[in-house]
Length: 472
Ligand code: GLN
Image (cartoon, rainbow, N blue to C red):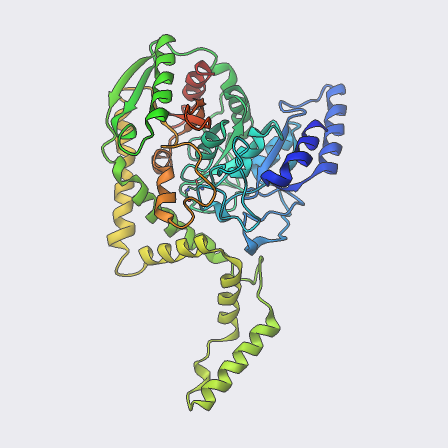
Protein backbone atom coordinates (compact mmCIF):
# COMPACT_ATOMS: atom_id res chain seq x y z
CA UNK A 1 0.00 0.00 0.00
CA UNK A 2 2.74 2.40 1.02
CA UNK A 3 4.71 1.74 -2.18
CA UNK A 4 1.61 2.18 -4.31
CA UNK A 5 1.05 5.59 -2.75
CA UNK A 6 4.61 6.65 -3.53
CA UNK A 7 4.25 5.40 -7.10
CA UNK A 8 0.95 7.18 -7.54
CA UNK A 9 2.46 10.41 -6.27
CA UNK A 10 5.85 10.37 -8.02
CA UNK A 11 5.54 8.20 -11.10
CA UNK A 12 3.72 10.73 -13.29
CA UNK A 13 6.81 12.91 -13.13
CA UNK A 14 9.57 10.26 -12.98
CA UNK A 15 8.02 7.77 -15.44
CA UNK A 16 9.93 4.86 -13.93
CA UNK A 17 6.97 2.46 -14.18
CA UNK A 18 5.25 1.79 -17.50
CA UNK A 19 2.62 -0.48 -15.93
CA UNK A 20 1.52 -0.46 -12.30
CA UNK A 21 -0.10 -3.70 -11.23
CA UNK A 22 -1.80 -2.34 -8.11
CA UNK A 23 -4.74 -4.73 -7.78
CA UNK A 24 -2.72 -7.81 -8.61
CA UNK A 25 0.05 -6.74 -6.20
CA UNK A 26 -2.48 -6.33 -3.37
CA UNK A 27 -3.88 -9.78 -4.18
CA UNK A 28 -0.37 -11.27 -4.11
CA UNK A 29 0.29 -9.52 -0.80
CA UNK A 30 -2.80 -11.17 0.73
CA UNK A 31 -1.68 -14.59 -0.53
CA UNK A 32 1.81 -14.05 0.93
CA UNK A 33 0.21 -13.07 4.20
CA UNK A 34 -1.69 -16.35 4.28
CA UNK A 35 1.48 -18.31 3.44
CA UNK A 36 3.15 -16.61 6.38
CA UNK A 37 0.49 -17.83 8.78
CA UNK A 38 0.64 -21.28 7.17
CA UNK A 39 4.41 -21.27 7.85
CA UNK A 40 5.07 -21.59 4.11
CA UNK A 41 6.53 -18.15 3.57
CA UNK A 42 9.34 -17.99 1.00
CA UNK A 43 12.66 -16.21 1.30
CA UNK A 44 11.19 -13.10 -0.34
CA UNK A 45 7.81 -13.14 1.37
CA UNK A 46 6.40 -9.64 1.14
CA UNK A 47 9.29 -8.20 -0.89
CA UNK A 48 7.91 -5.73 -3.43
CA UNK A 49 9.77 -6.04 -6.70
CA UNK A 50 9.48 -4.32 -10.09
CA UNK A 51 10.60 -5.86 -13.36
CA UNK A 52 12.33 -4.24 -16.35
CA UNK A 53 10.28 -4.25 -19.54
CA UNK A 54 12.88 -6.54 -21.16
CA UNK A 55 12.07 -9.44 -18.82
CA UNK A 56 8.78 -11.15 -19.54
CA UNK A 57 6.04 -11.60 -16.98
CA UNK A 58 3.01 -13.80 -17.50
CA UNK A 59 -0.13 -11.88 -18.39
CA UNK A 60 1.60 -8.51 -18.49
CA UNK A 61 2.58 -6.25 -21.35
CA UNK A 62 6.26 -6.69 -22.21
CA UNK A 63 7.50 -4.07 -24.63
CA UNK A 64 11.29 -3.91 -24.18
CA UNK A 65 10.70 -0.16 -24.48
CA UNK A 66 9.78 -0.52 -28.15
CA UNK A 67 6.79 0.41 -30.22
CA UNK A 68 7.53 -2.88 -31.99
CA UNK A 69 6.18 -4.75 -28.95
CA UNK A 70 3.54 -2.26 -27.81
CA UNK A 71 0.66 -4.20 -26.28
CA UNK A 72 2.50 -7.53 -26.47
CA UNK A 73 1.44 -9.72 -23.55
CA UNK A 74 3.66 -12.57 -22.47
CA UNK A 75 2.09 -15.99 -21.93
CA UNK A 76 4.90 -17.09 -19.62
CA UNK A 77 7.23 -15.91 -16.86
CA UNK A 78 10.96 -15.49 -17.34
CA UNK A 79 12.74 -18.02 -15.14
CA UNK A 80 14.08 -15.18 -12.96
CA UNK A 81 10.53 -13.87 -12.47
CA UNK A 82 9.24 -17.35 -11.70
CA UNK A 83 11.91 -17.75 -9.01
CA UNK A 84 10.91 -14.47 -7.38
CA UNK A 85 7.26 -15.52 -7.45
CA UNK A 86 8.08 -18.93 -5.95
CA UNK A 87 9.73 -17.21 -2.97
CA UNK A 88 6.75 -15.00 -2.26
CA UNK A 89 7.79 -11.74 -3.95
CA UNK A 90 5.07 -9.26 -4.86
CA UNK A 91 5.47 -8.13 -8.47
CA UNK A 92 4.34 -4.54 -8.55
CA UNK A 93 4.87 -3.45 -12.13
CA UNK A 94 6.93 -2.98 -15.25
CA UNK A 95 9.85 -0.60 -15.59
CA UNK A 96 10.86 1.75 -18.38
CA UNK A 97 14.07 1.24 -20.35
CA UNK A 98 15.94 2.22 -23.48
CA UNK A 99 14.46 0.45 -26.49
CA UNK A 100 15.76 -3.16 -26.57
CA UNK A 101 18.26 -2.12 -23.86
CA UNK A 102 20.21 0.03 -26.31
CA UNK A 103 21.27 3.16 -24.51
CA UNK A 104 22.76 4.67 -21.39
CA UNK A 105 20.12 7.23 -20.40
CA UNK A 106 16.59 5.81 -20.80
CA UNK A 107 15.94 8.50 -23.40
CA UNK A 108 15.48 5.90 -26.17
CA UNK A 109 12.20 4.46 -24.90
CA UNK A 110 9.08 4.55 -27.06
CA UNK A 111 7.20 5.27 -23.82
CA UNK A 112 8.91 8.52 -22.85
CA UNK A 113 12.00 9.37 -20.84
CA UNK A 114 12.57 8.48 -17.18
CA UNK A 115 13.91 11.15 -14.82
CA UNK A 116 16.54 10.79 -12.10
CA UNK A 117 14.88 11.05 -8.65
CA UNK A 118 18.00 12.82 -7.29
CA UNK A 119 17.60 15.64 -9.84
CA UNK A 120 14.70 15.60 -12.26
CA UNK A 121 16.61 17.53 -14.93
CA UNK A 122 19.10 14.64 -15.17
CA UNK A 123 18.91 11.21 -16.78
CA UNK A 124 18.73 8.13 -14.54
CA UNK A 125 21.28 6.33 -16.74
CA UNK A 126 20.36 3.31 -18.80
CA UNK A 127 19.27 1.12 -20.15
CA UNK A 128 17.68 -0.04 -16.85
CA UNK A 129 16.88 3.58 -15.90
CA UNK A 130 13.36 2.78 -14.76
CA UNK A 131 14.66 -0.03 -12.53
CA UNK A 132 17.23 2.25 -10.87
CA UNK A 133 14.90 5.23 -10.49
CA UNK A 134 12.16 3.09 -8.91
CA UNK A 135 14.50 1.82 -6.19
CA UNK A 136 16.05 5.26 -5.62
CA UNK A 137 12.61 6.87 -5.34
CA UNK A 138 11.47 4.31 -2.76
CA UNK A 139 8.77 2.85 -5.03
CA UNK A 140 9.66 -0.77 -4.20
CA UNK A 141 12.21 -2.88 -2.31
CA UNK A 142 14.13 -3.98 -5.38
CA UNK A 143 13.94 -4.38 -9.14
CA UNK A 144 15.32 -6.56 -11.89
CA UNK A 145 17.32 -5.01 -14.71
CA UNK A 146 19.49 -6.39 -17.48
CA UNK A 147 23.14 -5.67 -18.12
CA UNK A 148 24.71 -6.19 -21.55
CA UNK A 149 27.35 -3.48 -21.32
CA UNK A 150 26.62 -1.77 -18.02
CA UNK A 151 22.86 -1.32 -18.02
CA UNK A 152 22.38 -2.37 -14.40
CA UNK A 153 25.53 -0.83 -12.90
CA UNK A 154 25.61 2.54 -14.69
CA UNK A 155 22.01 3.53 -13.78
CA UNK A 156 22.55 2.18 -10.25
CA UNK A 157 25.56 4.47 -9.97
CA UNK A 158 23.76 7.50 -11.41
CA UNK A 159 20.74 7.02 -9.12
CA UNK A 160 22.64 6.09 -5.96
CA UNK A 161 21.54 2.46 -5.50
CA UNK A 162 23.22 -0.97 -5.58
CA UNK A 163 23.34 -2.87 -8.90
CA UNK A 164 24.76 -6.31 -9.66
CA UNK A 165 25.79 -7.82 -12.97
CA UNK A 166 26.40 -11.47 -12.10
CA UNK A 167 28.77 -13.83 -13.90
CA UNK A 168 27.51 -14.63 -17.41
CA UNK A 169 25.32 -17.72 -17.03
CA UNK A 170 24.76 -17.38 -13.28
CA UNK A 171 21.11 -16.30 -13.72
CA UNK A 172 19.00 -17.87 -16.47
CA UNK A 173 18.32 -15.63 -19.47
CA UNK A 174 15.14 -17.53 -20.34
CA UNK A 175 12.49 -14.86 -20.81
CA UNK A 176 14.94 -11.98 -21.18
CA UNK A 177 14.20 -10.33 -24.52
CA UNK A 178 17.51 -10.80 -26.35
CA UNK A 179 19.83 -7.93 -27.19
CA UNK A 180 23.35 -9.42 -27.45
CA UNK A 181 23.11 -13.00 -26.26
CA UNK A 182 26.77 -13.59 -25.42
CA UNK A 183 26.72 -10.56 -23.08
CA UNK A 184 23.15 -10.36 -21.70
CA UNK A 185 22.73 -10.85 -17.94
CA UNK A 186 19.78 -10.28 -15.65
CA UNK A 187 20.75 -8.48 -12.44
CA UNK A 188 19.08 -7.05 -9.31
CA UNK A 189 18.98 -3.37 -8.26
CA UNK A 190 18.56 -2.88 -4.52
CA UNK A 191 18.94 -0.53 -1.56
CA UNK A 192 21.74 -2.57 0.02
CA UNK A 193 24.45 -5.10 -0.79
CA UNK A 194 22.73 -7.57 1.53
CA UNK A 195 19.53 -7.36 -0.51
CA UNK A 196 21.54 -7.99 -3.68
CA UNK A 197 23.14 -11.05 -2.07
CA UNK A 198 19.77 -12.42 -0.97
CA UNK A 199 18.25 -11.85 -4.42
CA UNK A 200 21.15 -13.54 -6.19
CA UNK A 201 20.73 -16.59 -3.94
CA UNK A 202 17.14 -16.81 -5.19
CA UNK A 203 17.76 -15.96 -8.85
CA UNK A 204 20.92 -17.97 -9.58
CA UNK A 205 21.11 -21.56 -10.73
CA UNK A 206 20.79 -23.87 -13.67
CA UNK A 207 17.72 -23.76 -15.88
CA UNK A 208 17.02 -26.33 -18.57
CA UNK A 209 15.46 -23.57 -20.69
CA UNK A 210 18.79 -21.72 -20.97
CA UNK A 211 21.66 -23.92 -22.14
CA UNK A 212 24.17 -21.21 -21.18
CA UNK A 213 23.04 -21.16 -17.54
CA UNK A 214 25.64 -22.63 -15.22
CA UNK A 215 25.29 -25.87 -13.25
CA UNK A 216 27.59 -24.63 -10.50
CA UNK A 217 25.93 -24.96 -7.09
CA UNK A 218 24.46 -21.73 -5.72
CA UNK A 219 25.98 -20.65 -2.40
CA UNK A 220 24.12 -18.81 0.34
CA UNK A 221 25.56 -15.46 -0.69
CA UNK A 222 24.37 -13.69 2.45
CA UNK A 223 26.14 -16.10 4.80
CA UNK A 224 29.25 -16.28 2.62
CA UNK A 225 29.77 -12.53 2.56
CA UNK A 226 29.52 -11.68 6.23
CA UNK A 227 33.22 -11.18 6.82
CA UNK A 228 35.97 -9.75 4.64
CA UNK A 229 38.53 -12.44 3.75
CA UNK A 230 41.83 -11.78 5.54
CA UNK A 231 44.17 -9.52 3.57
CA UNK A 232 41.86 -9.22 0.56
CA UNK A 233 43.91 -7.87 -2.37
CA UNK A 234 42.13 -5.02 -4.15
CA UNK A 235 43.40 -4.39 -7.68
CA UNK A 236 43.42 -0.81 -8.95
CA UNK A 237 43.72 -0.78 -12.75
CA UNK A 238 45.60 2.30 -13.92
CA UNK A 239 43.45 2.49 -17.10
CA UNK A 240 40.32 3.13 -15.00
CA UNK A 241 41.69 6.20 -13.25
CA UNK A 242 43.04 8.20 -16.19
CA UNK A 243 41.83 10.95 -18.54
CA UNK A 244 38.10 11.57 -18.71
CA UNK A 245 37.49 10.68 -15.06
CA UNK A 246 35.99 13.52 -13.03
CA UNK A 247 38.54 14.35 -10.27
CA UNK A 248 35.85 14.49 -7.56
CA UNK A 249 34.50 11.10 -8.64
CA UNK A 250 38.04 9.79 -8.44
CA UNK A 251 38.49 11.23 -4.93
CA UNK A 252 35.30 9.55 -3.67
CA UNK A 253 36.32 6.23 -5.23
CA UNK A 254 39.76 6.46 -3.59
CA UNK A 255 38.01 7.00 -0.24
CA UNK A 256 36.45 3.57 -0.72
CA UNK A 257 39.91 2.10 -1.17
CA UNK A 258 40.91 3.69 2.14
CA UNK A 259 37.84 2.20 3.82
CA UNK A 260 38.75 -1.26 2.55
CA UNK A 261 42.33 -0.75 3.71
CA UNK A 262 41.07 0.13 7.16
CA UNK A 263 39.20 -3.20 7.13
CA UNK A 264 42.42 -5.06 6.39
CA UNK A 265 42.46 -5.12 2.58
CA UNK A 266 45.63 -4.52 0.57
CA UNK A 267 45.57 -2.29 -2.54
CA UNK A 268 47.44 -3.64 -5.57
CA UNK A 269 48.16 -1.29 -8.50
CA UNK A 270 47.85 -3.13 -11.81
CA UNK A 271 47.22 -2.77 -15.53
CA UNK A 272 44.52 -4.12 -17.85
CA UNK A 273 46.35 -3.15 -21.04
CA UNK A 274 43.58 -3.84 -23.59
CA UNK A 275 41.06 -1.58 -21.84
CA UNK A 276 41.29 1.17 -24.51
CA UNK A 277 39.76 -1.25 -27.08
CA UNK A 278 36.81 -2.32 -24.94
CA UNK A 279 34.18 0.17 -26.12
CA UNK A 280 34.93 -0.34 -29.84
CA UNK A 281 35.06 -4.13 -29.42
CA UNK A 282 31.76 -4.15 -27.55
CA UNK A 283 29.92 -2.04 -30.12
CA UNK A 284 31.02 -4.31 -32.97
CA UNK A 285 30.10 -7.56 -31.23
CA UNK A 286 26.93 -6.32 -29.50
CA UNK A 287 25.50 -4.73 -32.66
CA UNK A 288 26.34 -7.85 -34.68
CA UNK A 289 24.46 -10.04 -32.22
CA UNK A 290 21.62 -7.52 -32.00
CA UNK A 291 21.14 -7.39 -35.77
CA UNK A 292 20.66 -11.14 -35.72
CA UNK A 293 18.46 -11.24 -32.60
CA UNK A 294 16.19 -8.46 -33.86
CA UNK A 295 15.60 -10.16 -37.21
CA UNK A 296 12.68 -11.97 -35.55
CA UNK A 297 10.60 -8.77 -35.45
CA UNK A 298 9.10 -9.11 -38.90
CA UNK A 299 5.53 -8.02 -38.29
CA UNK A 300 4.33 -11.59 -38.88
CA UNK A 301 4.85 -13.64 -35.74
CA UNK A 302 4.40 -10.92 -33.18
CA UNK A 303 4.77 -7.25 -32.62
CA UNK A 304 3.92 -4.24 -34.70
CA UNK A 305 2.47 -4.87 -38.17
CA UNK A 306 2.04 -2.12 -40.67
CA UNK A 307 -1.42 -1.29 -41.94
CA UNK A 308 -2.17 -3.75 -44.76
CA UNK A 309 -4.63 -1.66 -46.73
CA UNK A 310 -2.29 1.31 -46.86
CA UNK A 311 0.64 -0.84 -47.81
CA UNK A 312 -1.25 -2.56 -50.68
CA UNK A 313 -2.38 0.80 -51.95
CA UNK A 314 1.19 2.12 -51.94
CA UNK A 315 2.41 -0.95 -53.81
CA UNK A 316 -0.33 -0.60 -56.44
CA UNK A 317 0.55 3.07 -56.91
CA UNK A 318 4.21 2.28 -57.39
CA UNK A 319 3.37 -0.36 -60.01
CA UNK A 320 1.21 2.12 -61.89
CA UNK A 321 3.97 4.71 -61.85
CA UNK A 322 6.50 2.21 -63.17
CA UNK A 323 4.10 1.19 -65.95
CA UNK A 324 3.57 4.82 -66.93
CA UNK A 325 7.31 5.34 -67.09
CA UNK A 326 7.57 2.30 -69.37
CA UNK A 327 9.38 0.19 -66.76
CA UNK A 328 8.68 -3.36 -65.57
CA UNK A 329 6.09 -3.26 -62.77
CA UNK A 330 7.34 -6.66 -61.57
CA UNK A 331 10.42 -4.89 -60.21
CA UNK A 332 8.32 -3.67 -57.27
CA UNK A 333 9.16 -5.79 -54.24
CA UNK A 334 6.68 -8.43 -53.13
CA UNK A 335 3.99 -7.56 -50.62
CA UNK A 336 5.69 -9.82 -48.08
CA UNK A 337 9.06 -8.05 -48.30
CA UNK A 338 7.30 -4.71 -48.14
CA UNK A 339 5.38 -5.87 -45.06
CA UNK A 340 8.63 -6.74 -43.27
CA UNK A 341 10.30 -3.49 -44.26
CA UNK A 342 7.41 -1.22 -43.47
CA UNK A 343 6.65 -2.89 -40.13
CA UNK A 344 10.27 -2.58 -39.03
CA UNK A 345 10.56 0.99 -40.29
CA UNK A 346 7.55 1.97 -38.17
CA UNK A 347 8.29 -0.24 -35.15
CA UNK A 348 11.95 0.46 -34.41
CA UNK A 349 13.34 3.74 -33.09
CA UNK A 350 16.43 5.51 -34.49
CA UNK A 351 19.04 4.04 -32.11
CA UNK A 352 17.85 0.49 -32.79
CA UNK A 353 18.02 1.11 -36.53
CA UNK A 354 21.53 2.52 -36.19
CA UNK A 355 22.61 -0.64 -34.35
CA UNK A 356 20.98 -3.02 -36.84
CA UNK A 357 22.76 -1.26 -39.70
CA UNK A 358 26.10 -1.29 -37.88
CA UNK A 359 25.63 -4.94 -36.94
CA UNK A 360 24.71 -6.15 -40.42
CA UNK A 361 27.63 -4.16 -41.84
CA UNK A 362 30.26 -5.72 -39.57
CA UNK A 363 28.86 -9.18 -40.34
CA UNK A 364 28.69 -8.71 -44.11
CA UNK A 365 30.90 -10.70 -46.49
CA UNK A 366 34.14 -8.84 -47.07
CA UNK A 367 34.03 -7.00 -43.73
CA UNK A 368 33.46 -9.92 -41.40
CA UNK A 369 37.15 -10.64 -40.80
CA UNK A 370 38.16 -7.00 -40.55
CA UNK A 371 35.53 -6.17 -37.91
CA UNK A 372 33.68 -9.08 -36.33
CA UNK A 373 36.57 -11.55 -36.45
CA UNK A 374 39.03 -9.02 -35.12
CA UNK A 375 36.68 -7.89 -32.35
CA UNK A 376 36.27 -11.50 -31.24
CA UNK A 377 40.03 -11.82 -30.95
CA UNK A 378 40.28 -8.60 -28.91
CA UNK A 379 37.48 -9.82 -26.67
CA UNK A 380 39.67 -12.80 -25.85
CA UNK A 381 42.62 -10.50 -25.03
CA UNK A 382 40.43 -8.44 -22.68
CA UNK A 383 39.33 -11.64 -20.95
CA UNK A 384 42.98 -12.66 -20.67
CA UNK A 385 43.81 -9.27 -19.10
CA UNK A 386 41.40 -10.04 -16.26
CA UNK A 387 42.56 -13.62 -15.79
CA UNK A 388 46.16 -12.38 -15.47
CA UNK A 389 45.12 -9.56 -13.12
CA UNK A 390 43.29 -11.99 -10.85
CA UNK A 391 46.56 -13.85 -10.31
CA UNK A 392 47.66 -10.76 -8.35
CA UNK A 393 44.42 -9.62 -6.72
CA UNK A 394 41.09 -10.95 -5.45
CA UNK A 395 38.80 -8.13 -6.58
CA UNK A 396 39.25 -5.10 -8.82
CA UNK A 397 37.96 -1.69 -7.80
CA UNK A 398 37.15 1.22 -10.13
CA UNK A 399 34.63 3.99 -10.68
CA UNK A 400 31.36 2.76 -12.23
CA UNK A 401 30.90 5.81 -14.44
CA UNK A 402 33.34 8.64 -15.28
CA UNK A 403 30.83 11.35 -14.29
CA UNK A 404 27.63 11.82 -12.30
CA UNK A 405 24.23 11.85 -14.05
CA UNK A 406 24.20 14.09 -17.13
CA UNK A 407 21.44 16.41 -18.25
CA UNK A 408 18.39 15.22 -20.16
CA UNK A 409 19.08 15.77 -23.87
CA UNK A 410 22.77 16.48 -23.29
CA UNK A 411 24.10 13.46 -25.19
CA UNK A 412 21.18 12.49 -27.42
CA UNK A 413 22.71 14.07 -30.54
CA UNK A 414 26.07 12.41 -30.08
CA UNK A 415 25.88 8.61 -29.94
CA UNK A 416 29.65 8.24 -29.52
CA UNK A 417 29.60 10.47 -26.44
CA UNK A 418 26.72 8.37 -25.10
CA UNK A 419 28.65 5.13 -25.75
CA UNK A 420 31.57 6.43 -23.66
CA UNK A 421 29.49 6.60 -20.48
CA UNK A 422 29.91 2.79 -20.30
CA UNK A 423 33.68 2.89 -20.56
CA UNK A 424 34.24 1.31 -17.12
CA UNK A 425 31.38 -1.20 -17.20
CA UNK A 426 31.73 -2.80 -20.65
CA UNK A 427 34.87 -4.85 -20.00
CA UNK A 428 33.18 -7.02 -17.37
CA UNK A 429 30.60 -8.03 -19.99
CA UNK A 430 33.30 -8.77 -22.57
CA UNK A 431 35.04 -10.99 -20.00
CA UNK A 432 31.83 -12.46 -18.54
CA UNK A 433 32.94 -11.68 -14.97
CA UNK A 434 30.66 -10.45 -12.15
CA UNK A 435 30.62 -6.77 -11.14
CA UNK A 436 28.81 -4.77 -8.49
CA UNK A 437 28.15 -1.05 -8.32
CA UNK A 438 27.40 0.58 -4.99
CA UNK A 439 27.01 4.14 -3.75
CA UNK A 440 30.24 5.96 -2.87
CA UNK A 441 28.80 9.25 -1.66
CA UNK A 442 27.68 12.38 -3.44
CA UNK A 443 29.63 14.70 -5.69
CA UNK A 444 30.58 17.92 -3.85
CA UNK A 445 29.73 20.17 -6.83
CA UNK A 446 26.34 18.86 -8.01
CA UNK A 447 25.26 16.76 -5.02
CA UNK A 448 24.56 13.78 -7.31
CA UNK A 449 25.31 10.15 -6.45
CA UNK A 450 28.68 8.61 -7.34
CA UNK A 451 29.17 4.85 -7.65
CA UNK A 452 32.11 2.54 -7.07
CA UNK A 453 32.47 -0.70 -9.01
CA UNK A 454 33.92 -3.99 -7.78
CA UNK A 455 34.79 -6.80 -10.20
CA UNK A 456 35.70 -10.39 -9.31
CA UNK A 457 36.72 -13.62 -11.05
CA UNK A 458 33.98 -15.76 -12.64
CA UNK A 459 31.48 -17.04 -10.04
CA UNK A 460 33.06 -15.10 -7.16
CA UNK A 461 30.07 -12.86 -6.43
CA UNK A 462 30.66 -13.75 -2.77
CA UNK A 463 33.83 -11.61 -2.85
CA UNK A 464 31.92 -8.67 -4.33
CA UNK A 465 29.34 -8.87 -1.55
CA UNK A 466 31.97 -9.30 1.18
CA UNK A 467 33.90 -6.23 0.02
CA UNK A 468 30.71 -4.29 -0.72
CA UNK A 469 29.28 -4.90 2.73
CA UNK A 470 32.39 -3.30 4.23
CA UNK A 471 31.64 -0.12 2.29
CA UNK A 472 28.06 0.40 3.44
N1 GLN B 1 24.83 1.38 -23.06
C1 GLN B 1 25.21 0.11 -23.61
C2 GLN B 1 24.50 -0.09 -24.92
O1 GLN B 1 23.81 0.78 -25.31
C3 GLN B 1 24.89 -0.99 -22.67
C4 GLN B 1 23.46 -1.31 -22.64
C5 GLN B 1 23.15 -2.53 -21.83
O2 GLN B 1 23.90 -2.95 -20.96
N2 GLN B 1 22.02 -3.12 -22.14
O3 GLN B 1 24.63 -1.08 -25.57
